[in-house]
Image 1 (cartoon, rainbow, N blue to C red):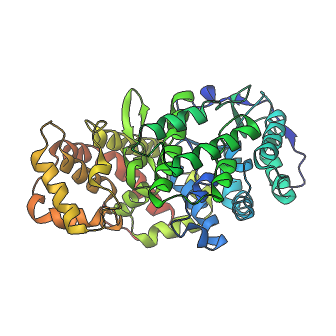
Image 2 (image 1 turned 180 degrees about the horizontal axis):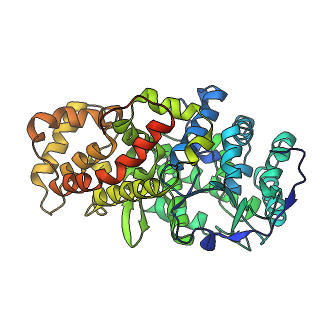
Length: 434
């Protein structure tokens, strides 16, 4: 982000003040813990360019339904893996990312002072403590300009706390872990406790990078590994939701127990995965073709940002209300009981769900949720976890529609359509019926 213009550190803004009257969200998907928990999938086998593009696309999508996106210094600095360092360096040097920073859509969230100079210094030092190694010099040099501005009219940073936050991370994680059915006398639990202690010895906190490094030398069962992931990710996002109320956060996986993770927004418990840019992408592809979405992602970000006006604000309001409506009455529903990715016998899995729907005694209609989510994201067949359920339920429950949600969606179509039409006109996309 450097150029011939002189840059200087700035007096930053408290996050509660910065987010007042806005919809803001934390972007955690570049965090090392996300990659560390991917040993049972293909994330780490991806080409570097693909990973960088994925994050840029995620940020672009988030900017279509959030006012501002906060990336915490822990995400950018607490790294022990050279591959992740390369990903972050590629993202922060990307032209779209730079544009989002200049336009105030993406901001860096730090701690340890009211100036960006203090935040940068604290983040760099804490990174060294938590990983036991100095950050790659190229990445450090690339990150520093994110904390600096060329004029007083822009503010790249916000701060969460003047002191070090998140001392509750280990307690929150262990509380979540102890509420699972993990064998507390088994070797898996012993390994996990040792990894927590190892991480805390470095900084006094449970940090994803040092915790997962300590786990690398341990051979956990696949079930224990998944339990650790769900407890770590879920407890971390719950802690963020508690300590920074009003700023949205979401889990990064659409499977397992994380489907049941909730955040409290406007005094309503909402399934946090519904705020994922992956869900928004499915939703957008109801209104635009995949090719049109790709065309938008390829264009300079400024062309999309200039469309942020009244139509965009109404579009955001309709989208968020749709998510809230989808979650009405679902805060106590255990989706992972019915949508468990380990149940690979799809026929039995769907039958179990059917039985659950037939025998459920309370007033929560799980099928209505699935129907509503289908309407919301429009890509239920593109989510492998849900496909077999819809295939099995189609003939039996296809005619059952969540009337409340359907009516709500019709009422808000007038709010959604103008912004989408404006995108089509601005990007010279082929007109379609909306």
